[in-house]
Image (cartoon, rainbow, N blue to C red):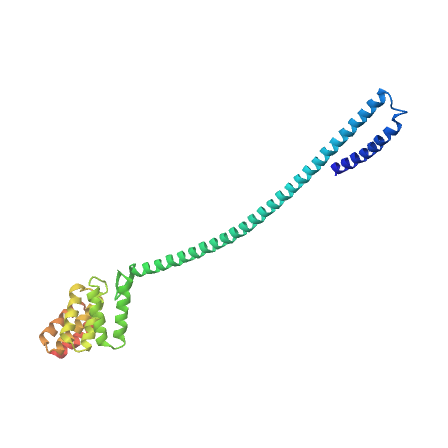
Length: 264
């Protein structure tokens, strides 16, 4: 705005000077014939030249100012473009960050589920304390499961299947604390199937390995019954007498006395 005003004033002065210069020849004869008049004219021309130069500089300044303004506008547009680009990139980064957070959360959940699953599977292999027939011992979860499954089969009256289940248990877990009880039920399943010799073998094995077992009196009585079925009267009598001597206060001992009386 200042440059435009300067140009306007300069143009106005130039017009005034031009008019003055045009009038000079008309009055030259009367007013400026001497040297002083010529100097005045020269000074006036110099002033005109100076004003023209100033006008040119002002125009150049105005053009430069316009160029500078255009440059500033271009710079502002570039800056706005860069800002918009950064805004878009920031939005993308926020989206990626949110997705990463969701992925991390999902991975953590899966890791927790896997850890719980591993713990559960490990617990299946950890020994547990059990109490069977008055005997307390440590057993693997698999031992406990298989023994209880075989016992369930026996209680349903499926004695052949029970024999298979208990015989398989004894073979698979020969050192298990369940073995004496497993042999007792295996012997009873064989007795029910009239496999008396096999039953006697399992009852005798129980009495040999665990003579103080809670099932020992019943095992001795059952072994005597098998001997009676096989007509081994002498062996049955000896088994019953040993039972009465070893477990005099047991119910099995009372039953043994009755059987002894019938054998005589």
